[in-house]
Each structure stands twice: as C-alpha cells, then as structure tokens.
Length: 129
Image 1: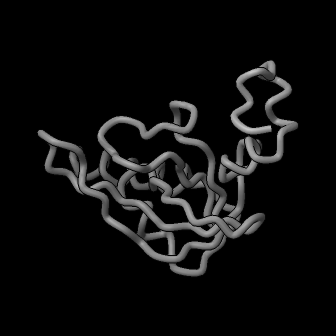
Image 2: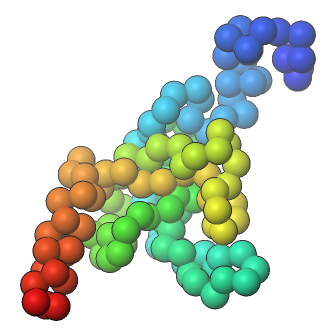
C-alpha cells in the first residue's frame, strides 16, 4: 500500500507496512528485556544526564531506548530483567530535552515503581524534620 496517504486514520492500522513501522505494532504497552543501562545527555543549555535503559521487545525483537522515571529507580533495574514499556508522550516523538527517547519504563519484573519512590520520599521528609 505504501505511505497510507489515501486511507482514513482508523484504516491505516490494517496496512502491514504502517503497523510494522511502529516498534509496538499499534499497542500501547509492550514487555521487553533490559540489555544495558545508558546515560543520555540532555540537549543544549542543560548539563543533566538522563537515566535510560536499552530494551529488546519480546514480541518482535526490536530494540528501543526507554527512560527510567524518578530518582534512584535505575537502582531497581538489572540487566536481563523483564520490564513493561509504554509510550512517553508526543505520539512517537522525543519528549523534552531527552533526544531519541520515545518510551518510558513503567514496571520492572511486574512490580511498579511508585511504592519505591513513595518510601524514599518519606525517608527524605524525616531527615529534614
């Protein structure tokens, strides 16, 4: 079919080449295996190093870069862990000052991040009291 210019938006997903262009294949989340931890430098006028992981998707073997949210959540991820990855924001485009990263990690070995970060925040609050 080619570029799908003539198809309505909902019919594009029935085109094989269009669906294969997206690493997730048209779904919102995908499981993957962590290959390595990577530090991605932020764009100009910001000197931060964003914590990311390289993930190989289980469903099709494609490799994607995924952002790890919150402080110290990278410590809970080891190589060869199974993670759940979701889209990051702008419909396939990079978000903010993180170049080339279009996905984010939601869960590691089927346990979400938020309990760890919530406990860490409580510890930090007690230190300042």
